[in-house]
Amino acid sequence: MILRRKEKAGQWNRKHLLGLRDLTAAEITHILDTAKGFEHLSRQSIKKAPPLRGKTVVNLFFEDSTRTRNSFTLAASRLSADVIEFTKKTSSVSKGETLLDTAKNLEAMGIDIVVLRHNAAGAPAILARSINACVVNAGDGYCEHPTQALLDTYTIREKKGSLKGLKIAIVGDIAHSRVARSDMWAMTKLGAEVTFVGPPTLMPSGVDKLPVKVSYSLDEVIEKVDCINMLRIQFERLGGNPFPSVREYSHYFGLTVERMKRAKKDILVMHPGPINRGLEIESEVADGPNSVILEQVSNGLSVRMAVLFLVNQAAAQKA
Ligand code: NCD
Image (cartoon, rainbow, N blue to C red; front, side, top):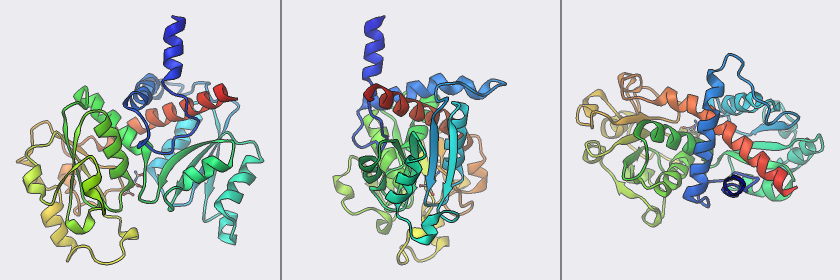
């Protein structure tokens, strides 16, 4: 029993979650198993447990967010932490204060965990080197969005039992998507075959060096895959015009009712949100029987509870 406990503790000893690229399959599995253990909490009438009592989590969001921010807030409060909400618009960042000064000032108030969303890739890693609190990446530029990929992976594992041998398509604006990158790391490490699908103009440079297949035709891929993750076009990040018109994009890369007729009967339809209905996915498909989009959101809560719990535990062990 003592040995088993030691083994369990040994599966996670990181006080930061910066990305999934450097994580082992065992570490990812450990987060998913821990999330499974928290799932019941959301079904209880009193949705509270004490593991983070007396701890303070700050949601430090330099970019807009609906799901991720609220999910972290709820996850932290369900584990009894105090939560500080920080937004760029209402803070002194609008007066020129830097990320590091902001974080150091918050740290001076005794915070324990920083959940950071930032438009600069690598911002969470810089913060982790500069402050003592735990840092959790809630999306950095085009780089990573680890908790989104963990909740995607969790959802697939719940529905299909395992990711081993599954064929997964990630479709759309791969070049500007941190979700695509983190999904790729999590899903391939757990044994799935991932195909990036989209127009050549929305593929990242160096895609040939990534552990994925690449396709420029959704029609070629749709019949073969067990899961399909539809991405939003990140209009706010686009420089030029990567396709002639939105209509043309939808025609070739949209998940339509017509295309779904050729998909496997039990295909899982996923989307990280926010959805642009009628653009990358038709409403009938987003709300249809194969869609697990809202389950992804529910699972996000368990996954974020697990992440906050694990980084806090690792910090306590290192102290
Ligand atoms: C994603 C993000 O912000 O990277 N959304 C999310 O966190 N659920 C994807 C997107 O904005 O399209």
